[in-house]
Image (cartoon, rainbow, N blue to C red; front, side):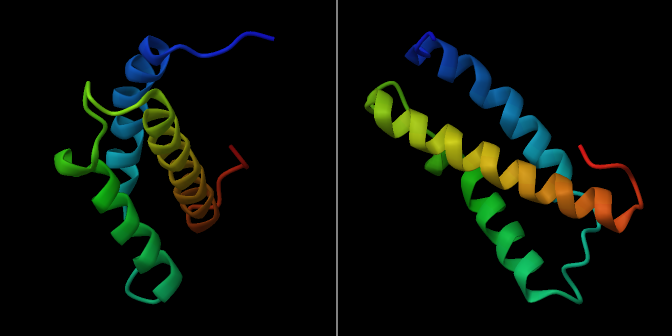
Length: 89
């Protein structure tokens, strides 16, 4: 097993945020579902530039941010696939 470096995390973060941004623009049923509204709110907070890790952010903080972004992206992708009758990602 290997360990991710800060450089790996910094390289992956924009990719994940790009996917998250795409999902935030989709109709995921927020008008009918309070839980989806909450997830979208959390997603918008995560992609906000003021919430993102900076060079001064400790590596563990960057890891936690990336983990949260990945987790939320995965949940929204699941909602998207269910709403659109697609196979599981």
